Length: 104
Image 1: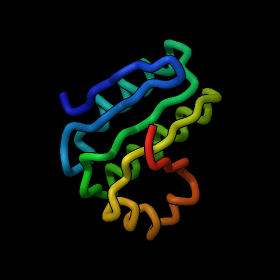
Image 2: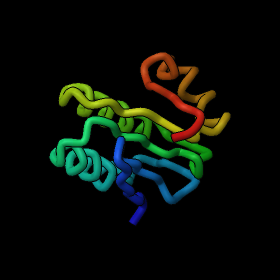
Image 3: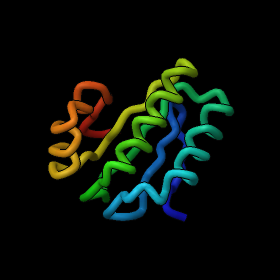
Image 4: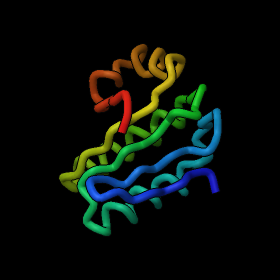
């Protein structure tokens, strides 16, 4: 399992258990997002604190999850974004699209 899901009163947290997101996690991640939204959750937090590197495919996976959440009137935010990942998100201007928080 490449993601852990934990539920809190105010949100569901999806945390990746790896240092590199290559995009191969897309099916499991998207299933996690869809299952969470189907339960009526309106706030999803993606914890990237262990992630040091993301590929373009992984960025697409995050954008797809963001769009899916937005289309269902839910909020998807990122937390624990490392400087290296933030640099990548900034280069493609996604730091202006995603809600990025310091902590949950």
